[in-house]
View 1 (cartoon, helix red, strand yellow):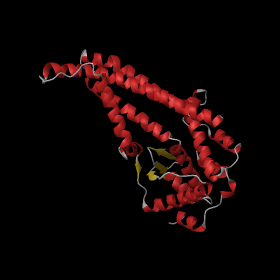
View 2 (cartoon, helix red, strand yellow):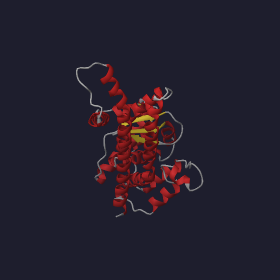
View 3 (cartoon, rainbow, N blue to C red):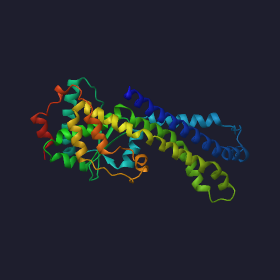
View 4 (cartoon, rainbow, N blue to C red):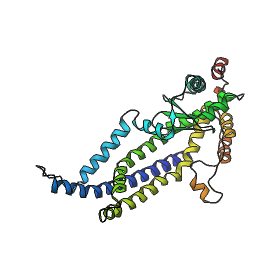
Length: 308
């Protein structure tokens, strides 16, 4: 019952956030379109008139961009790669990653859990971390690859870290973010135009009158998802535990830092991740799923993982 409530709360929160963003973006685009359509109709001498009440046109533009971003393979992932500084792994890094994933795949097959096809990325940062984004991307920090390579059970630890990120993919956490991106992008056109004309007398005031409030509303709506993001982290932890058992995920927690933004009540709402100790406590209370299949990796996988 608790899991069902969590799924509903996360999805409902995202839906509210998307609705607010889409509405605010539509209002901003409609406001920007009014002087543009008036200027074209007045000065362009076209054989036809562009309707100034262009609500359907604006909706069409929003829907088209939304479709383009979500349906064109690799488009939104390409921009996330640029934003995160993610690159394809070297052959040396790929040996390590694929050995960990092969172990994860073996256990998943034994437990009857289907894993998605993953496109691997590496982020050149020294800290121990990883992230999932888009429809099928998992990016591992160089620090996580380096740290796990030289630990006794590093292969299992890296597999658990990967399983956590696959949990985000399986539960559509990353697709939810991609949908939000697709809804925000049309508004960025209006915001960019406003930044170009805001110093022009009267014209800038006209644009600022709506664009600035809409920008504020969209920012708040995007932050709303932080209210349930910690639920998503617990859910991804539990998926990793379901695959490999709690001991492997507890190894990951030992490597993670717990940097909290503040020490008061705001710290809970300013962080997308719950405190590491509470994540440990949550897993300790849960029984492992089919623990007889939580077997150690084979020697050939360990050899591939440690290959220099």
